Image (cartoon, rainbow, N blue to C red; front, side, top):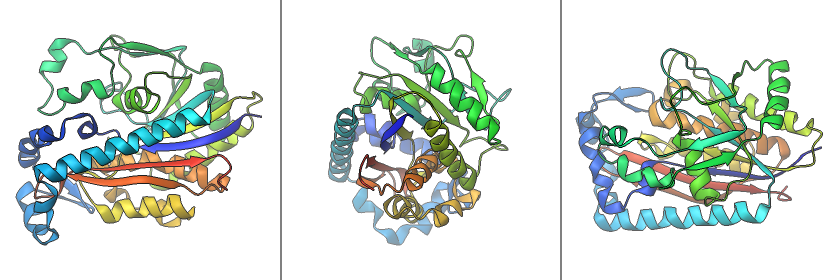
Length: 337
């Protein structure tokens, strides 16, 4: 029987890989966005700024605050990388999402698994880079190495998980190769290979959750059920591998909601999944939907009765309206039960 030895969860937002002096590059786009999701409804930028005027956010968007919060994030990422290295895992299963990097409107599965032998992470064409919104291109090195890369997959374990999950009622889409013309794994996964594995990736199995795009977004409860089913599938695998589970994404963004994030962080500390599973889907839209990448892992660790450790929680505000990305970093070690 395979042995789960580690759980690891990290935000992956572009601000983590952007010099803090350039965090403001995205504010113009924030101001022009007429539909910011926050606490179950949509707001214009000006409405949010007025709503949150009493929160003291002006102190969180100074150059000094940006420097300090960026440094805290980088320290937490380094800690997670050390924890990952120390676990000596043989294979890693990654819960992540796609933001129209792999899937298009023609076909957006709710849940998917990649079964290929190789995982490509090649640089985008210069034409693609030039079309990126302000503040995005500068972060590319955070999830794609300058020379590009190709990583080993875990297709045999993937086929086993597919069979077990299908038997439990999870209708997974299965990918044996990248979409035609695509040579870059979505950034949710590329971040893990580059920054948590530090460009020394072990074989991995990407699991995709459609967090962003209606109408087939799995609910918080379904994501928890998915995580528990993955644990059962691993336990039925006859191999002897040491397996790490990693979640990539979140926390609340593109409008930060620290109260929402506390629901998740409390669950991973206590293993009480009820408040997290009960979250209404209206709270988990836009960037905050990536919390759903964490939920399967938190549920899996609760199933194992491993309490989590929060390495850090850093709300990285970039405007007076509360736009930005709350960054979370956590881990669960073997033997912590």
